[in-house]
Length: 135
Image (tube, rainbow, N blue to C red; front, side):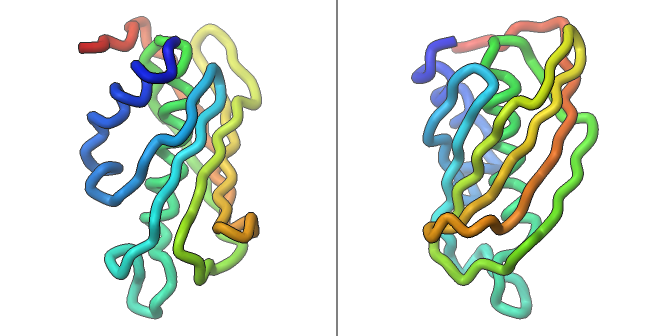
């Protein structure tokens, strides 16, 4: 898959865009996303809201899992939060762990700008019998 086409395709993810998440890099089975933290990403105790971290990691998974050109959707996810981040930038790096004809497994690590591990998301994706349709 062409990286530019994939980046353009994932700009259609309106929820991620609304939350300021960008797709920085994508290649087969691998992707990196970025989020500049704003006041809107903070929870009631002034740390980054868990859902914002999950959304950042979920887009990295989606890009990596769909990078082969076959529609793949998440069917199971588990997140572990290791550290609250006080930084201004979060990055998520998705890496394929295993893949079969129908199921793919990914780990997504979330780091701040000091490269401190903030969270890890493990996801399972289901590969549909449908190619990605580019505009």
